[in-house]
Image 1 (cartoon, helix red, strand yellow):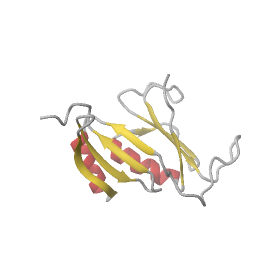
Image 2 (cartoon, one colour):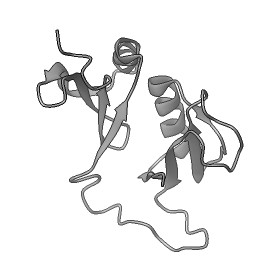
Image 3 (cartoon, helix red, strand yellow):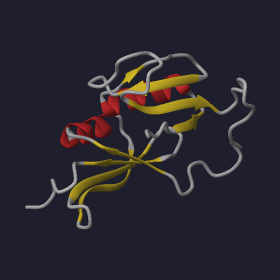
Length: 138
């Protein structure tokens, strides 16, 4: 089983560029209404699920399924996009370079024993960058 997380965006290309810079991922679909982002170390095909980390979908694109959300309601309430990364320090530097809104600066989560960095993306979703479990324990 693999999750295939999809979030709604106001500007799919801008969000794609933001996440690609932040996470070092690559776009696998492209377009103004929909994008698939991949971990380049595991990406094997345009449509396969290996390495898929995030799907971005325009709020207003209907496609074949109808509207997926209501832009007039709070965006992302209760949802955190959580990414464990091997290059934690580099991702934090890239987030700062992107001038991401910092919600909670780098800290150690004592329960998981790793470092975390909490930010908001272009649409206001909470994004948590975490180092591998146990990495923050001295």
